[in-house]
Image (cartoon, rainbow, N blue to C red; front, side):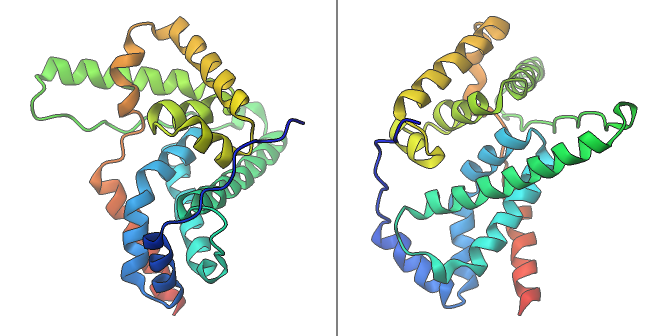
Length: 228
């Protein structure tokens, strides 16, 4: 297996200060941390799990793990990378459990796919434009969900979240060349199905409105308070 050439990025002084506050029990600091990283982490979870509700649940569990383990953070990578790795581990555990359940479940008992949530609509759009944009975005999400997980995750991090090749390689623990090849392959597969629609909607994938951010923060903070 080829070694990854990227080196961990050190955390900023601001991140370290925030971590110290959280480790000391400052829940307001943890809420600030969640709001800073919510959208990127949700999109990462959604790309791996292909289900809105599962992605939210996984993100909440990862946040609880992060809060409980904050005193163990050693600053060997940025706080965003540390959180993302906790989330990836949570998602992988869920995927393994799902695979075990599906092996034991009769085919005719498998649940139907979840419907995609209604997307946020810009006030400046006409009803026709809003409907068209929502349909295109839903189609792109559907096609993206059909990609192999390795391609899908790289595409979300690079094209949706606009992370650099270096950041993506370091986060996923793969060579930069692999990041480039997976992104290229993912784009090619999507382009075959969607052509011109890709460029128009890719930055709006997996809408993360304020209501979803507030719900995740509220649920996690309620669980933290109940731990005390």
